[in-house]
Image (cartoon, rainbow, N blue to C red):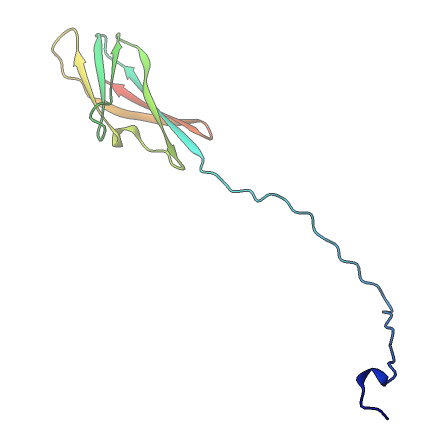
Length: 130
């Protein structure tokens, strides 16, 4: 017997599996990420007086943001609106409202009358002026 590695006979064994397994690859879908929903808050003013007035809406944080609305007696007008992600917030937390009478010298008050959701992403806040 020789010590040469290549002199020995080689036996090959053939393996045949009894059952064949097939791999099923699941279809890949792009990953979807939920985005923040944008909510809109609108503020409306209802002038319950008979007098002509001016309503000021001054933003509490942004000094340069102010809105002025001129109203006749009995008018209902939109004062403005803003958007936030994921929440509704009452406008009086962001704005300071004040009334200037154009006729007469009476002082008027502004109070939140009601809020209503017009759809899933818009809420209206109604302020009454008396």
